[in-house]
View (cartoon, rainbow, N blue to C red):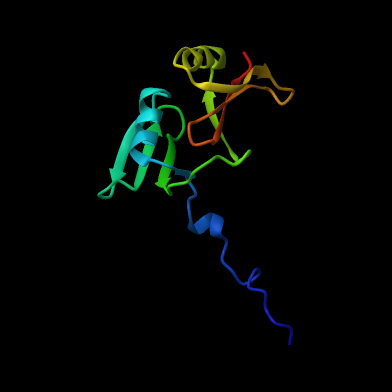
Length: 142
């Protein structure tokens, strides 16, 4: 008798569980500074800062009026130096991508790719936050 892989025997997870969000964890050198930067520069709200001294935080943007909110978790790991590429998070913002870009540029955000229309129907721009992570903001073409 052949050994079971478990795949055919497993119940349909789509009917038993509801996947409803992803919360990426970004390693940062100073969690309090990072949380304040996301709040003061990008307009997120600080959901929590935990630990004494602080070592973990979560920031949030949006509410349920248009999809799920965006949550980012910040983990203090005392990194020094920034590798050339650490990964990328894509954040969908709906509309007015150029207005968002202008607001962030006015606040001194490091823009690494200006807004451009993509053949897949989105307009996007990318920034680098102080710990080196790339955040790409995209919106629908009008």
